[in-house]
Image (tube, rainbow, N blue to C red; front, side, top):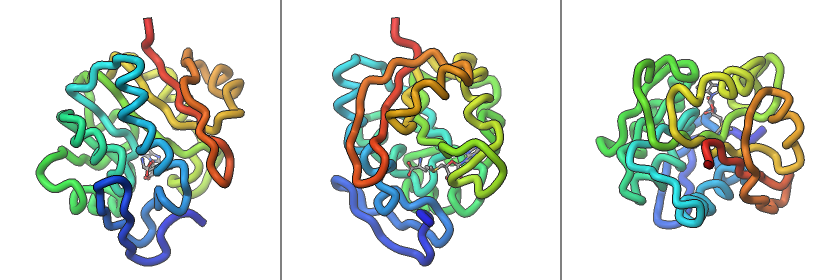
Length: 189
Ligand SMILES: C[S@@+](CC[C@H](N)C(=O)[O-])C[C@H]1O[C@@H](n2cnc3c(N)ncnc32)[C@H](O)[C@@H]1O
């Protein structure tokens, strides 16, 4: 289990965040922390605009916190009210945190960049780790909401992303003590 079993505090770069009980813990799970640490470099290297950013499935808000550091105006969403409460606590008034499924909280809006470290597993179960159709819907819908997508997903699972309809380029393979994390970008010209 990778969600916090009790409230704990994590530190990543300059950010000290509370991870409330039941919310995805990006440090013990590793992928969230790896994504967060790589994020500034990837955006810089690929010269991806990031003035208006959506952090989709924000959890405790780590990716949103990094984007705020980079000067972005951040909207952060999650389907789990424990996560949105936790992210609001961690991000304060600097981010607009909203509750809801996928793009439902931001219908009609558009972002320069969508960052997402969504559940990897496909199936029924705990939405922190698994979803029947989130990846499939994300593949279909993200171009209506953003110019670029930066997606975290296991590095060796590129074929699944293609099968789901994504047109993405893997730009990083980040070793962790578990599965290597891939960072995949959509919207590159
Ligand atoms: C793997 S965790 C990543 C959390 C955070 N982005 C991080 O990297 O630490 C996935 C997050 O997506 C959220 N989520 C799952 N299904 C969702 C959906 N349909 N719409 C929005 N958020 C969803 C979960 O509640 C969880 O907080």
